[in-house]
Image (cartoon, rainbow, N blue to C red):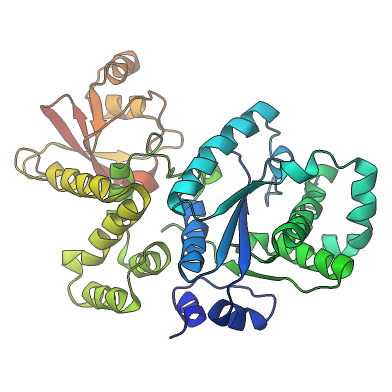
Length: 401
């Protein structure tokens, strides 16, 4: 299969603005961009699909530009349900630094990193209305899915205008860098087409865009911090072991999809693992490969080997499930680690639970817990996990519905 066919086989193409994209990606070397807003000081696994796709394009010879939205981050991309909270200038700048370092590492320093604040900060309100707003019809904006869904609950003018700012980003990169294509998750389709429209009307030239389907967890939810299931790419926020443990517990129904999206294994290697899922699911070869390859690509071979070794040791001699005390827990909304420790009788009270946690005495699946308010979320731990006090007290916790 050619390059574009492989992208489709991996499930990485949802919408395309023109059939010409297939030829461009197969035969040309184009400059493209992907953007994100600095709403936190780290990206998470929900962003990683786009970053891996950008890396695939770069490996095929295309030139990536990674935009970190210092301007759009101050406004906020409309969410389907509610207005975003405004974050401060200082927070945005701090977040940008963390994100830029991650992007540079993941793309092996091969991407040009830009910030839309650089070309937005000196544009006056009147100039923006004349140079951008004049070219985009309000009816066109109202037809955007994300805006249409917010009309009943209400949307501020700031978020309503977001698509104009992102459209202008595409225009600026088209002029400055000969960037002719934008690549993003499918929730950005409306913003991509605004940029294409603006370039066509102002410059009389054609630009392109394609989107990737949003990758969902096993419960059908987006990966992201607002969904409460964030797995951060910063290993200080989410350890390589925790990512490894999450992925090794991937359901058979999702593991091949994740292998196609998140790893650089060849189609032949993935199809071999797909056969293993069907014929010998008890070996969980696909899950083990997914967890290892993901951590290796993100954090390096050493971290991947360590995560795999730690995972194996959790159920090895002296720390096996056989004979280990068990507790069945019904997960309540907003149950935190202190509630859990009291429920499984590791601590007699929440105050004692807090003391144990702050004293580095509590671990989950061999990973120290440092935050007394950490929520227990099923997606992070699946249906069971091991909670430990020190080196001698281990309890297997089964989450029941």
